[in-house]
Length: 617
Image (tube, rainbow, N blue to C red; front, side, top):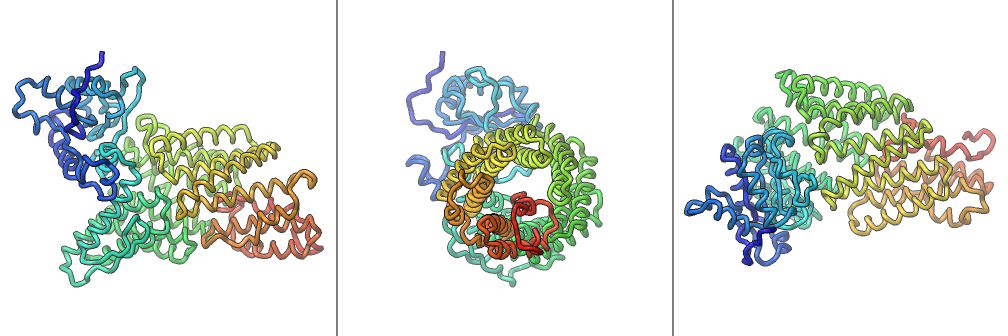
């Protein structure tokens, strides 16, 4: 029989359940929750009672001083609480009282308000058995925020709890909180910000160089940490790559003081920012700027590691530099340089695992390393069996991590990436059934990620990529009509997402690729069974790039090849040669068997084209 909560306005946003042995850490968490001020625009959506702060969070040491009956006081507090936050640790997992508080809250309010804050230990030893047992008997774990010191105890984890307590979307809270923190930090540094509204525009001016050096260094660390972690992650998850360059510029101004005055930690932070800037420059197609930034990061991390070669944090920082050097070499067509960078990264990841075999973060690095080498085998070397082995190895590295952290966002993302590339290597070998199974596993992984964060636009982009890949597998099986139907459905979905978020250019690119693959399949059908040539030509258009960057150039080249095929069929050999001319120019600079973003084999797409004698194929 369920206990009925008293019919009164609830006094607390949450009841904090914990082991007394964890009092110091829990009091700090309690203080962070009670002092957090919701961004004004978020508070306005929470209802009249919420205000800028959350309702009080119940902590028995604070609230039960005058209680005569502890059991009744706990019952009353639980009845007046919207949520239960369990501070999870091995001590809490053994606590009888924590188990009773979990059971009592569920009897009063049901399952949905139960949250977990992991403060020590691994989930399997820190989660109380009652926390895994839902009221209806099914085994499940609640939303968990990770506050363990070695995992950073960052602001993102605090925002997970705040979003749940306030009843607002996590993505929206992250973006609004980042906007507010950027304004506060920048103004605190004596700079100015203009147009910081809805993350639509960000413009940050320089730090006053006359400020006292130690004070500037402290502010630089604050801003740098914020830029590297919370704000960057928030913008990337929202697909707002257009704003990252301005964010990077602001952070680098803060960290471009006299480098001799920066601590090793701040130098690592500066290297991370340089890596982020290089990554953004590469996305814009500015490979020269990207290489310059990655080189500067490599120089910094190399010096730091030389000074302290066994420090895992410095090994990790230098591993990231080696990865980005390998990546930019690959993008520039330097296959040997790409392999050297990725192999150096793999060796450093092995050193990390050797230093602490139980550290999941280091195992993740080794999974990334295998994935990178698999990408080289797949796209650069055209060695499909070797690529398949690398991706299988990477998946095996992820398995133990996901066994005890099944909802780890980074591990899940790498799993879906491995599965996508594994499927591509299987499709290239003609193992279509295996490729379809890998893509299905990828879809299930992505859907589980989207269930946790329904507004994650990057996951939605990956799901569109999955849909396109499944259509390509169907086409390889000879099911052309079925593949066309899948492409049409994917195109409609991409257009819908683009309309919902006009600033996100990725959805428009994906919509275009669905169109082009459909046109490619039309050209494989007998002429009597396909749309009229005029309609195909209208879909292809003038094939101009949608913007700068390698992915847009790939789209344009694919379109040009299809246009050349259409003109060749119509007997317009000169027109076909003109359409292929820019593709040949770009192909001369490429070194990969498959293109970088879309995995296109443009040479295979061009084979059906009939050209004039001596014109080439």
